[in-house]
Amino acid sequence: MSADDRVAHQIVCLHNITKLLSDPERELEEVLDTLVHLLPEGWQFPDITAARIVYDSRQMCSSNFVEAPWVQCAEIWVLDRNVGKLEVRYLTEKPEADEGPFLLLERNLLETVAAELGNYFERKEMEQTRARQTRELELYASLLRHDLRNDVGVLLGNVDAIRMLASDRDEIVEELLVSTEAVCDRMLSLLKAFGLSVKMAEGNIVSLVRRVSKQAEEASMNLSVVIEVDDDAEELTVPESVLLPTVFDNLLRNAATHAGENPTVNIRISREGDQVRLIVSDDGPGVPEEIRDALFRRGGSTRVGGGLGLYLSREIVEAMGGSIELEPSQPRCGATFSILLPLL
Image (cartoon, rainbow, N blue to C red; front, side):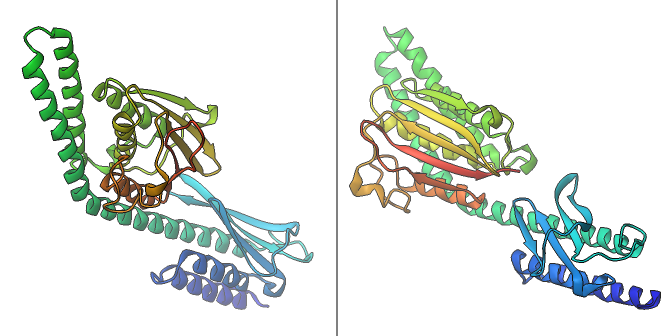
């Protein structure tokens, strides 16, 4: 093949790949699968050329891919993050050229396609962020009606108690005032959340859980929260969400209300591959079998804190690409929820 023919083949190959990456209708898996079969057409020996894309925890290979020793590789970057790599391999030995058996032209094409892939992944991540924010906004009105109605009920109850006890129960009055202030802070945080930039949302999951737990203990003086963090989980970062704190707040308030007189909630945080798992368990009576299936449904039973609160919690977690489940009941154990969230 002449030099001019090689350049022409590369131009056609790059044009087809650019067109592919610009198609908004195609799903990610389809795009990557098509790309690894288009890419070999830009190399000298397409019949014995294989390609592989590694992106985060997934990889896509051409149908003929094997781990042959003759390889060209380019890193894929999204902003300042290395998110994967692009590989091209010859399946049989070829004469030496500019870079092993590969040409400098092929190196340039590989780097160009890797850069285009980085731009494509960045667009996909932005689309996912916009979709998550839109879903959060749709949830926000329901969340306000649910949480603020409950919090106002707590405030009114505290006010009535102060009126009855203020004359000779100064210590109790002070405790009620502290509880009232904590509830007010929670309400103000919720109201202010959507006035903040998304970048202001807390991404470190351990810091978030510790902050929400402290607020819950101040708001419910009978509640004790114990947090256990694996050594490799201290600095884990999840997608930013202004509504994620309400998920843990809801679980903790449910425990304070339904798990007995002086409940203890244990929260275990551990890493599982490219996800973080949070196990939230209390020492209460658990969830009756007859309402377990309806617990996360909209308008489900509120006897153990379900209804809209847990329905919204699942919506928020799933909007982030995660999951929340009620674990099977165990003898002499209370309610246990398992939350999985993706990591950045």
